[in-house]
Length: 196
Image (cartoon, rainbow, N blue to C red):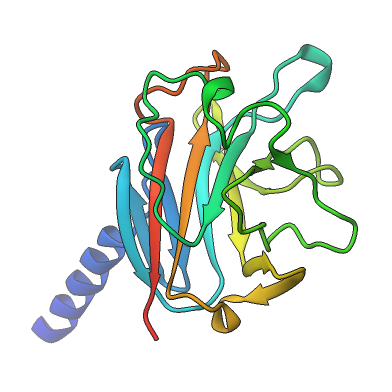
């Protein structure tokens, strides 16, 4: 009986350690059973070269009300060292107007462009008009999930196993109050290292 109690306690403790924590100050990286709650502005995470996702809190994109809630992500093969906090989105070369990539008809949304020149614009309007999935609610916020199966490079979709680098860097921004200024908790510089 003591062994069963010990096993149940260990199982419960392990599940609590692996639980997602959603707040407006973090993003959650998921791959299989692994969950990483990312609160730091700069974070390095080691993953298998397989599909993973980024989950975050935001509100739906509401064009009729001029409430353009969306996340933005710059995806590169090297780390971008730039001070973001307090900066206007329009003054940052990667996020200024006109640098967002459109998704072409043949390009899947979970294979973002690998580029230093522009960003992915991640929004959710409805089940028919979206670049991310709405997977639930946390208080007044919706929980969105951006799944990354690989990248778009050399004019082709490339799964992570076929990717020719052992890292991908994602500069991830969510301007939740829509003031155009990047504030604490609204940006994460994620370095994903793929273990081979």
